[in-house]
Length: 172
Image (cartoon, rainbow, N blue to C red; front, top):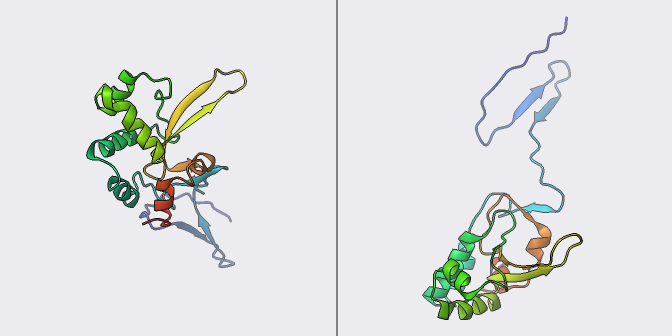
């Protein structure tokens, strides 16, 4: 006579459940199968990492305190999973830019230009079918990223920037 049993068990974070066939001795691991979607990769080599301290420390040495504070603000401003800095873009007024960056209007343009040249953010523009023309900024994911997975194509946009080279250990 065959009976099926359903049992709820508690597991620690480093344990997995297994089924053992008492007749054959076959062991089957039971998992949820945390698969990463096609075209994405885990950020931070398998674990959630929001900031990359070595990259930030390197960049801090090459910025003024104000520029570093603005870069940090932009990192916090970045949207989850896309690192988009919307509504910031080339069409943003100096007043908008200054307000979001937390600096005076007279300094906003110069700071944003320096951060762009350092690879802290990228300027992206696209014209899509059935959509209006878009032009916006994206924060460099090699400094910080908010999400468990990152779109490989978006990450590759930054692969030759200074923060990416520091992250990979090509520059120290």
